[in-house]
Image 1 (cartoon, rainbow, N blue to C red):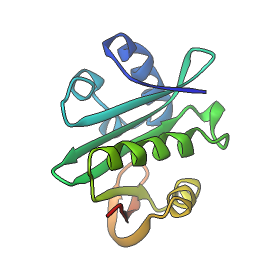
Image 2 (cartoon, helix red, strand yellow):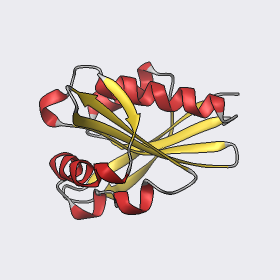
Image 3 (tube, rainbow, N blue to C red):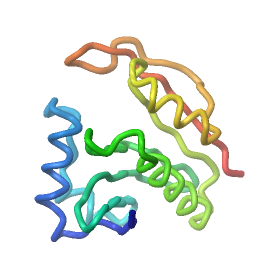
Image 4 (cartoon, rainbow, N blue to C red):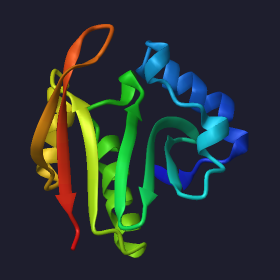
Length: 145
């Protein structure tokens, strides 16, 4: 597995991966906007050159928010998500970020378990936040200070 920042040449592969991971249009990423953004981190995970996962995060001042972590369904439960989130934690520390926030579907038990394993703590929830299917969002945070 290799990690690299995504670049404009990755648009088509990233969009295809996003569609496989997030079939609802409202949950997908506009990579043409996110990749060039100065305050975003868009990392790709590759296996044998193929894009099999990505992470999108933004930061403002001393806070980072992880917006999406996506791993191709055929590559899940193999550590790609862990490596991506760990890379974001390292990047945040390098930038002097004091804390990281995210939200995750309450029904996404593997993701909740991953974030808990990485030291994120539950700080709240948003009832009915997600659509298709309707699901609650669990709000998680991790201090880096």
